[in-house]
Amino acid sequence: MALPVITIDGPAGAGKSTVAKKVAQELGLTYLDTGAMYRAVTLLALRRGVDVNDDAKMKELVRDIYLDLSGGRIYLNGEDVSEEIRRPEVSESVSLVARLGSVRERMTALQREIASRGGVVLDGRDVGSVVFPEADCKIFLTASVEERARRRYLELQNKGIAISFDEVKQNIVERDKIDSERDIAPLTIPEGAHIVDSTGLTIDEVVQEIVRKCRTD
Figure 1: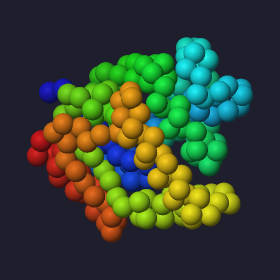
Figure 2: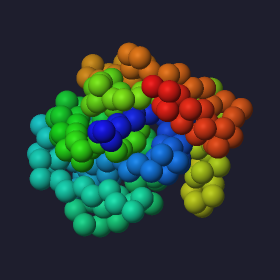
Figure 3: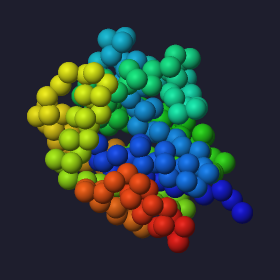
């Protein structure tokens, strides 16, 4: 029996990464954080001073990029950037990077290559609609804007990053708009996906809900 591919899509701050990791652990699968891949590209662009709106320059940037996701960490050209990619300046630009066709083409190819043997849980904005439309189980995880902003704000505070709640909320609203309106692979509910609203639920409650749905698919 082939190992399953499970996709979890949803807007910024819905808790996709946290939930996907736990779902993977619960089912004995590998977790692939596709959002971290786009964040790593964004970090590299910011470091090198590349205009994230310049498709041609971004295409050149990602052509020879090397990303490795192992042990719950992400390595950019051999460097562990797991913490740095979560900084506010990366969050502010990642949706601009993710809307570029050249970047999406390269990341989609990498994601398909990594997950080609199955046995993976992927999370992102288009993993169920574009990257793996034939996934064995597709989830669309969402929550209210207030709830998503609260979670992200607490996450950043715990990491010692100084930012106001209003700034975090505004960033999420802007990312929602960019992600939903971009021309290439916009954020959408994949066909056949189970919708899970995590507002007011604990992480474990969300995980168990997803596990139940995927075990019955």
